[in-house]
Amino acid sequence: MNPADVSTTKKKVKENDSMDSQKIARSLKNSELTPIYITSIQTSADRSLIRLRKTRSRDLSRTKTKIKSFLHCNGLHIPVELSKDN
Image (cartoon, rainbow, N blue to C red; front, side):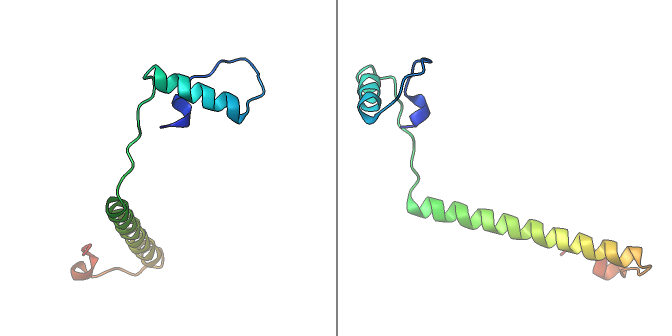
């Protein structure tokens, strides 16, 4: 469960484990809490791989743009057959 889903009062009361556990028990009894989904290890690994690929792809694109800009600023022109993004 998400800790933010446990209802609390806005009073400034010193909290402790006993009070927290009572709030959680009350919320569970009243069916106020919804479980959170925890992904499998394989799904987490797949997502991590996709994020890494996306990051590297953006880094590559950014680097190509920097090189092209540098060459353009120094008066060098990229031949048409090399200017296509591959």
